[in-house]
Image (cartoon, rainbow, N blue to C red; front, side, top):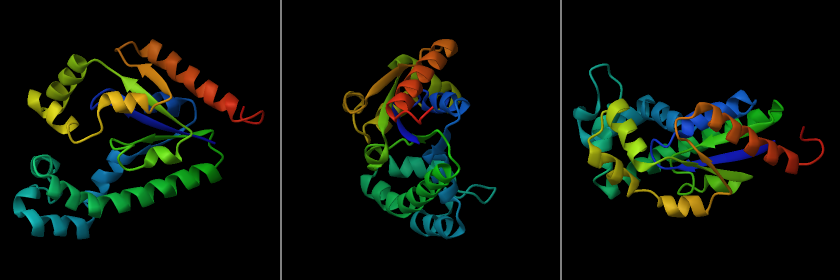
Length: 203
């Protein structure tokens, strides 16, 4: 089984690339989704409310992730405090999903994690794929789809490893320029190359 990490800028389309790998039979580990689930574990939710007050809990009783983001992306100490609670839970769940995929005989696993390198998740990957998208395209995505202020993109990316470094540490690059067919071909080519080098039994 080949383990593929995804890297790239915010809103570069890593989830879209993960979907294309899934169409080829890969199991996708969505660490962002796992982190969202971890925030609403009752014990974690209660802890956040104790730390930051009731403003981080929405009217529906779940964690208001936007309110949390406004705290942790301006205060590194608070961000590290949150990560210290959430990251171990997320990493444990991710390992469980990967182990299950291996037992099930999946041809590949895709590790879709915003902090792939920062969390050391790349070390468990056979290869990392950098998803390339223009800054303007990514800016349009976060302002239109996520409702972010324009400066929010750069502010959040400053908390991560630079795009230049992410690309340098990646073995493959796929360009996500809105051409779905081109992206599909690129992903299939990368997956084919990785499967071939796994050995004669990979196919």
